[in-house]
Image 1: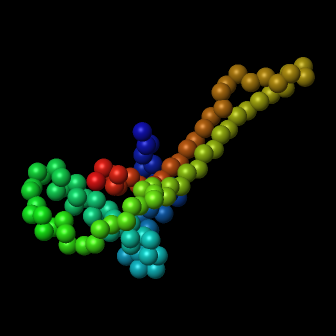
Image 2: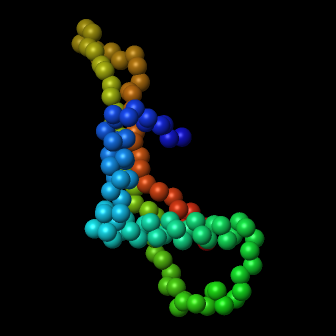
Image 3: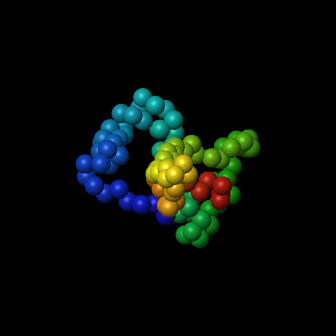
Length: 116
């Protein structure tokens, strides 16, 4: 389960706000961002059509050429794991009474493309 980072001055919250504010400019300069937005739109439309139970005429399925198989349906992800541990030495032996602490930050997207 993702943990919410809601402190308004947190660097990741500020980054997300700036990214959102400048999204159109970023998408214009980085075509992959624009393509991911279009994939998200198509995925939402496909999900709606499947879940609504609409029956589409066969002509809808012959509008384009037959698609070539896709080799990979994964969306790139970023992650950052950090582990912290304190140890002490007593009489030449390493003493540690606590398990290492970890902090993980993960990002990415799951458009559910494999379901279509």
